Length: 82
Image (cartoon, rainbow, N blue to C red; front, side):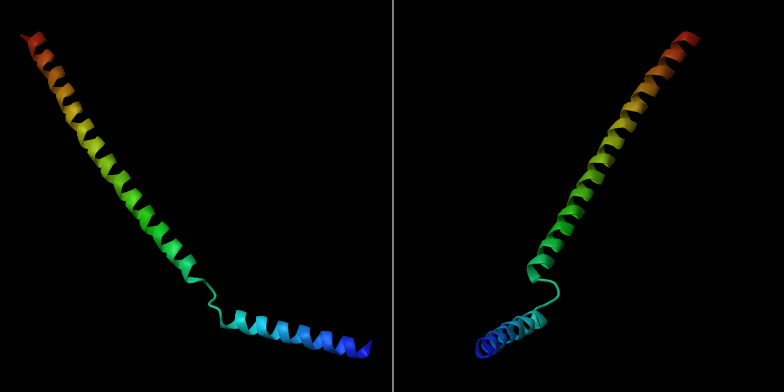
């Protein structure tokens, strides 16, 4: 019984030591995780930039339409004045 217990403990010690060494040599963050994070950040920036561009384009179109509407109103007021 004692011999078997010593052998099992030695085997467990070996496996535990090897696993500990592997984990100690492993980076804290996997490179795949960093690549994924980087790609997601780039994608987010691209999408936000597109949203801002679309918003600016819509604002310019709305300003132009507002100018046209204002011009119609001014024209009608001038007609009524005369």
